[in-house]
Image (cartoon, rainbow, N blue to C red; front, side, top):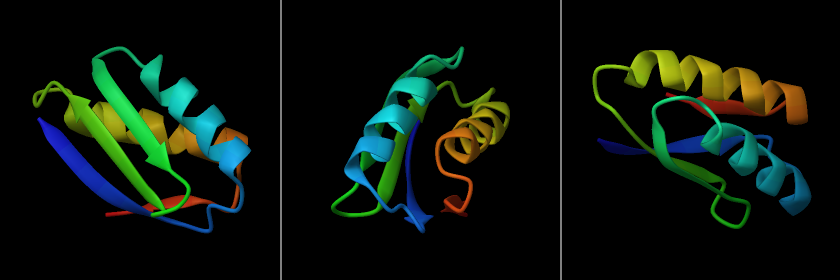
Length: 72
């Protein structure tokens, strides 16, 4: 399953790259992309674990940039 989410308060391209790397390390993630230009997060992952993966992704994003959040 692939889903696209908007990101709020993503302030730098370097942070986006760090977030992408961290999310790609989460168990169950097939592929994750964070676009600074479009302020979007794309996650491809197992459907049964998607909620758990999304929570872990939000946690990873907060570690890199505390003000940034996923808009559901």
